[in-house]
Length: 124
Image 1: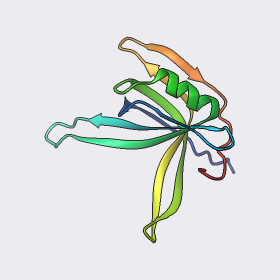
Image 2: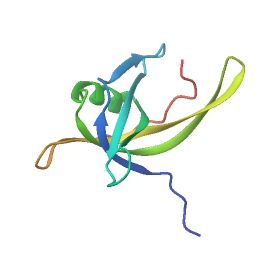
Image 3: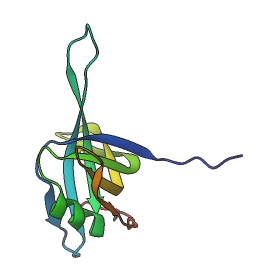
């Protein structure tokens, strides 16, 4: 039987500048929303929004290189985080970024491909 891999790759635009947080143990955590616009003739335009999370070196590189509106390619894995809000169970889907590339108008202009470190168990 072949191993099952959790891998996702998306291209879209950064919805805001990357937010970088330093956790109490010194680990960096970056968050970003990725917007994808797909235009289909005869249908109303609707953006898909994805929550991105990056850790450690990938987080600092995202923060240093990506700005609102930049077109980027991200690769990582899809995770579902479970928590409670006002006593109600909630699930949030996130893409945990392992690699990313900043895309230019002609070709890839800058690329970062760092080995992602495992995410800490808590979000501190």
